[in-house]
Length: 296
Ligand code: NDP
Image (cartoon, rainbow, N blue to C red; front, side, top):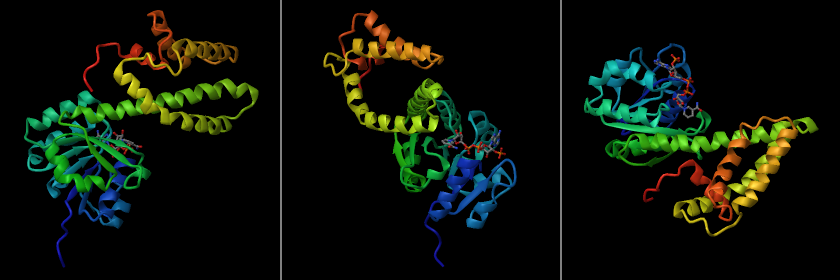
């Protein structure tokens, strides 16, 4: 029998996501050790070939690559602080959703103990892990990323964004902000048509078609935002304002709260008030982040 050449992996945290990560490592042939605070979440993984251990210490000692997928920043410290001394000759990858400042704090905590640290953001739900479409963003130690890239690729496409451990998290949350605001826009529209008897499901179908048709234009909008020159106009701010005024008015008439659409109109109004009404509607971006831009 030949020994496995696959990296040994430990997964700390067997919530829905931790279980999916561990299952992907096992399926890819990595000797996988698992640990969870509460018992009872390991049976299926053990049946698949994972080794379940009772203590964090045993779990950390078992592998070259330690992946934490816990609840939040505090729980990562709660679990890892007592075993910091054991991690120095291993690679720590934190896939717990952590704010950029939290990721940087964990990187400093790790650096103080010579722990090679990589932070990651998961752009997938558990069912997608190990499947096409799953993408994970990483930043922090390039050494960890390069040494364990193959193992990390078993979870989904692995992309590295630099030595600052907070970058992956920042990009993760920026992407999620777009997703949440898009859903909120859909909720707003569904609320507008509710009283005429259109179901939210039917409205969802219609919205999905319209949004899918619009989404490919995002990179072109971004290219204009990157230049900061809004003189090439596809749709002027004054046109967008007329549309938003009408939507606000129709929303009011339908008795729908303006919490979602009101601030969108506000972004446009501020640029028009500053004298930019004839410029491209992408200029609304400048209301959000008006500082001088850094080179991209
Ligand atoms: P769950 O709520 O299903 O699981 C949370 C896990 O954290 C459990 O294993 C839980 O242990 C453990 N935990 C919580 N607090 C502590 C603590 N103080 N000490 C030790 N362990 C603790 O969450 P998910 O698995 O879904 O998510 C895990 C991480 O992955 C989160 O940061 C989440 O944001 C991120 N993520 C999740 C996605 C998803 O779709 N689910 C998508 C992208 C990222 P116990 O069983 O003992 O409670």
